[in-house]
Structure formats: C-alpha cells, structure tokens
Amino acid sequence: MRRAIYPGSFDPVTNGHLDIIERGCKLFDEIIIAILINPEKRPFFTIEERRQILEEVLKGIERGTCGLRVDNFEGLLVHYAVAQQAHAIVRGIRAISDYEYELQMALMNRRLEPSIETVFMMPAEKYSYVSSRLVKEVFQLGGELQGLVPPLVEQRMKETRATGQ
Ligand code: PNS
Figure (tube, helix red, strand yellow):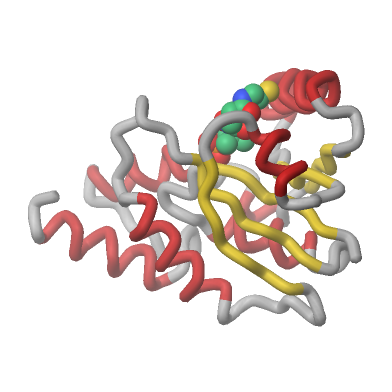
C-alpha cells in the first residue's frame, strides 16, 4: 500500500493540480490531498470551501484504483505525513523557477524526516503556466478562466464575489 500526500493551498484548485493528481494515481495506491491551514494568508476560499470544492471535482478525474482523500493540516508537513503513514510527498514542478524553492523544501523535509521521499511530477505543458495566484488575479480583473480551473471553481468564485465576501 503506497500512500502519498499531495499538499498545498489549493486556493483554488486548478486543472494543473488535477493533472498532477491523475498522474500520481498511476504511482500510488492512495493520495491524500492535504490543504495547509495557514493563518497568515488571507485566502479567497475558506478551508471548508476548498475541501468541498476538491471533493466535488475529484469525482470527475481518472483515478484507476487509487484512493483519493481530502484533508487539512497545520504545522510541519512531515509530521502530518508520518502521522498519516505516508511514504511520499508529491509536488508539481511547472518550470525551473519552481525547482529552486521546491528543492529547498524537499531537502529540508528530508532532513526533518528521512523516511519520506518527495516525488516531483510535471503537469501537461498546457498547464505549465497555471497557478492559483494567477487564476485569482485574472479572475479579479475580469479575465476568462475556462480551461484553467474546473467549471465548479469558476462558478464558486463568481458566487463568492457576488456575495461580497
Ligand atoms: O501550494 P503551496 O502553497 O505552494 O504549498 C506549500 C506547502 C503547503 C507545501 C508548504 O508551505 C508546506 O509544506 N507548509 C507546511 C509547513 C512546513 O512543513 N514547512 C517546512 C517546509 S520545508
């Protein structure tokens, strides 16, 4: 039973994240999509909203026999990974610019907990420039999100804006 943690902010989940999860499903028996509770950031969606959106959009992805679970965590990622009896942390790398930060994190995590391996995965080229940060910026400035995020995400973003939250 190979279990991986796919950690992140997922604010919001993008098609790039889903692409990585689909690819991860070919390698692992179970992936826990773990949303970081970060009190310092002012998020677009609450943790509960992100969890609910993830659970909904995960229903539509190619997972084979891989089990998918959504959870949230706070504190050190490696502590959470050990508590979940995970073998690996999955991170998506889009470009060389991601690599420097991701390498630092992977090596720090390895120092903190040598039993957990970090696995870097590349999303499809068409998602290589998609990030949650840019998605929010494009949305806030009135741009089109089709193809970048699942339709449910765009719908929820519009609803959140409409209610003035
Ligand atoms: O999607 P993100 O925001 O780039 O994800 C970053 C994340 C959640 C992977 C990273 O911030 C993290 O692991 N935070 C938990 C705290 C921790 O373990 N810090 C030490 C990392 S070396």
